[in-house]
Length: 402
Image (cartoon, rainbow, N blue to C red; front, side, top):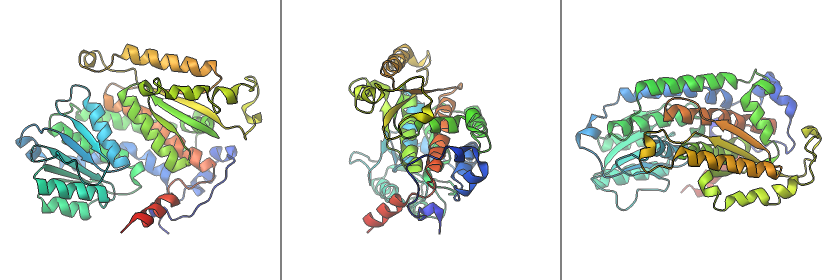
């Protein structure tokens, strides 16, 4: 049985086992595929991928000048790397950056454009179709994924640079290993100003958060376990205050679904204010909280009542220099975040707050992603799920494969 393929079978329980979170030995037994260890390797992934990308000759990308547009092709975590490139590049990015999540590439892509095909396994149909189409149309191609795979062969066929990312875990636990080569390709094209110091600081941040969230630390001092307990038996609403925080929010929605099997509403706080903030008034929001005793012990609450839990990811917005561009001023983003937090508290909806830290956009993103990544795993483990194995994903692949 290979846990990477998600064939461990469906298991788990609806009730949450709070005692398991503070039993390191039990956590390790219930995580046979090592998802916690894989997630803790995020800092090492940054360093390894930066070194592997440095060994790949990307000079041809810059030799042909600035592209008309850059398309990052893939699905799931691979496509999320495109969102990261677009966000880190910021509103001053000189060309459009598009994360393309369907097979092939948009019809307008041609010789003036760059396609970055990303697949952790090296065999994603969407990435393979994108690489094939890019090569046929004469677009500049960069391929990123597991070495000695179909994607690697396609890159060789079209004489395109290939950046190897060794596959040691599912794609969702390899976000940073995939994102760093995409960012370095973007830097070669003049889209981002990320430098080696940014990568080093981001890796250090990820290492520090992995240490804070290690399985041997008890819940009251472990932010990953604490957030998992906050979300237990709730419907999480995850909103990001800025474009960068929005990427982190959507990433949290991804990991909650896969690792914990929890449904979540995730997105930008600006969009939420146009309609989704109405959830706070609904049957899982204010109406569910109306009869709650705010002084009661949370362990005594009726578990049959499903409630919302608002998770606010606050970035602090754009820097002073970036505000001169077309981005939204940070004061507006912060005011919106404060307003929605106040709305939730008025209705009795509980709020978990995560604030970005760090000097660069990449490090701030890491500070918003790391703890939620661990929280999704701990939440799944507390329900008896193996976070590495997602049977529905394997079955879905079997049902749609040719």
